[in-house]
Length: 192
Ligand SMILES: *Cc1c(COP(=O)(O)O)cnc(C)c1O
Image 1 (cartoon, rainbow, N blue to C red):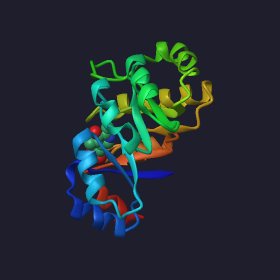
Image 2: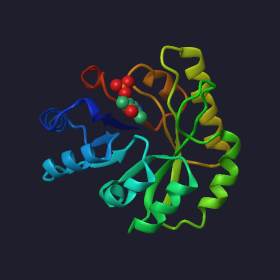
Image 3: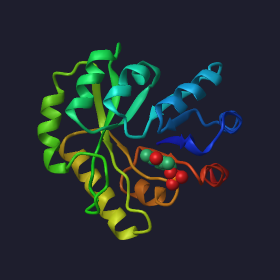
Image 4: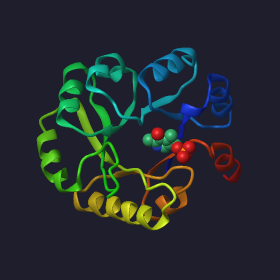
């Protein structure tokens, strides 16, 4: 399993400190913040994940600076990635599995078609699915994680990016391969 520190809460000194403790994967939500932190931490061997919503007009700026994208959610975004990315990018498709109107992610009914359409994008290497649980609702979150697991098996996708500070144990139970921990990173590390 891969631990990704969701570092939007943390400055570069804190990231350095976590790196010394063995965390080497970091995920950022905002393009400028990722570029800024990456630049300042250039001497560390960090894998950078983009985990926030990526606007098509920001793709050019960031797409060759990251190792993983967790939030592919439209063909429009795929087109921009195809246009600017140099090497194939390991990418998760973000699903919207919450009945609550979560802003981003594709509907699972569209996944089969989306995967077929993405086959001709040689700069996008789909490695798995990503989803966000419902805050403060354990039952709905568990349903979401189960669904991700089921779809991963159905479509033969290797990785699941599910689980955050408050639900990572549940996510691991349902097959998470990548967890994204922010606020509880210190607690998580001290448990390992
Ligand atoms: C902030 C964030 C996280 C981490 O959130 P915590 O609840 O602090 O662990 C994980 N994934 C995404 C997409 C985030 O934006």
